[in-house]
Image 1 (cartoon, rainbow, N blue to C red):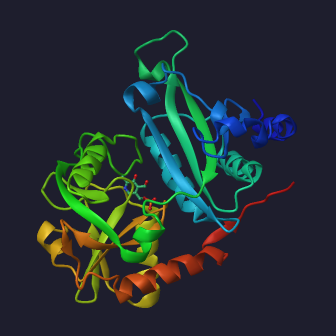
Image 2 (image 1 turned 180 degrees about the horizontal axis):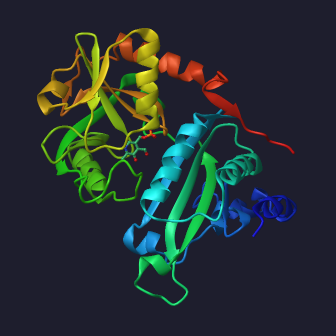
Length: 322
Ligand code: PLP
């Protein structure tokens, strides 16, 4: 199918999101693209026979739009396309077509700040074969309102986090550098956090060091230097952005082992995600981080991070009308 034609044709037939007001509580206001069409979120559904649903056989990426601009879209596309290739999937759309589709999902949704996801699932096989090579891979994209790991209050006072005993699925089982939906360990961590009266969790790598949390990486600051786990984690784009910001600010930063004790004794801690950016942590396992307040280095990084969202070197505009 010629995607360029499909994208223009469907512009004229898309039901307006107003037609779907009744679904607002169950579905966020947004627009999805699947099987060659743009749809309201309430209509974007996958088959229960899709390997993505049955076996978590999928990869995805999430980029955000802030004030009408994509943030570091190229890096997200690089990571997504690498994942697709490593999982031996094939996309029916090119990189340029994906970019156009993501743009159109945001433009049709009308959001100026959005959470934009691109997904490739193994799909289904026309003969229901158990051989993954026979499945027809499926590309899906959608744009919904901007989402954050931390809410406004948590961003203002810092998140309360626990270190769960849960171990992240080993990299030799599932490669964490390919963004994936293997979240049972992360969800278990979340329940451990709720049981302890905290808001989110960090889980461990197979060596017992800190790994990452449900949808985020973590940084600890001690003696003016920053450290983030180097092994067994998704190389987050926000994490990478922190490296770039540190280079600009002349702050030393390294990706290496981060022990539980080191995290507990850090002066400042923050987590990073496309869903929320750089987010301060002020309590770990019930104890204050440093003085229990958001630290000055974290504040500087948060400010510079959001400033970069208008900078053409770091962001690209959404084209809302054609
Ligand atoms: N780690 C995991 C497991 C994630 O799912 C995510 C994002 O969803 C991250 C880290 C943060 O990555 P990014 O900064 O690219 O959003």
